[in-house]
Length: 440
Image (tube, rainbow, N blue to C red; front, side, top):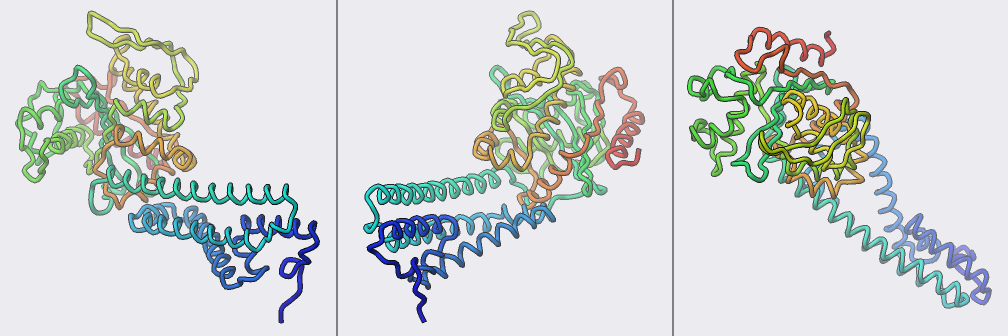
């Protein structure tokens, strides 16, 4: 039995009725795709369209609930290369289906039966809606493709994220390969240790000029690394002076040899085993800060931005005391400048910027600025964390961001730059790790 309704069998000579009917159908096509077909005729097409729309809505709600209850599992699955590819296919298929539904809705709206002004408005709304859907789908597919390429390029390691005594340990290097510098030089050295359950982090800062360094047993550097060489010299030593120290590491540039040497030095100094590194290149630092919308820093005192030689200083601006919102260029100079202050002051400022960046890496920021972040990332960061660890890292970062970061700087006056008392260092490291566990 077919029910007689104004939507299904209207009086086509009643122009006001036909106009209201046309607007209802066009609006319903936007809000509840498939319902115009269910109400006006092609019910099979309507069931397909409405069913597809309903599945997507339920899927989105399910994904939201999953992300709230298990962020690591959700992120690992969502960022899997097959999931991202499937999502691209679904988006293209849906927009094609919706375009078909829109054209069919426009046909069944019978806009030839309405007055010219309404006919033009209905046509404009339909065309704009179709264009928005096509451009939106194109943008979404591009967005997902950028994400897939970004994660493939950044996360080159294999396997699962490795715990060390219930923690994830990373060597964080700030590298400066700028103009006038030979090769890459780690100017900033830190060890980041994160509790695997709570996400609370401890950051241990190692002065670049620290010497002699302590090295772990079994390191190829032990017994050959010169006592006079500073902590940041490990990369240069392994890539230019004593190449091939690590026979199990094969790379054409020697980069991984140098990184492993820096891991050994940081591990020896802190007494922690460090499986992974994260390198931040200062040349990409400014782009990343801008991509994140800037950072907020509590500046303790007026600082002039100065570089150059010891006898010829070049002024690049300044920042005043107080809470300052910094763009990329200002944050870069704030973290890099040291001619008017000490290396230890610079380490403190670098730590401030690092913590401010962590605070900025919110899910909302990542989603709203993802394209800019993706473009900045290859110039900003390099890591050997495994591709399969993205979910765990995102969950850890989300937990860490909400908690205070426990810091230890191995700098004077508590720790001299040369001939450290290693028992004192071990006690301080144990204390900051305990604090990050909530034990002290």
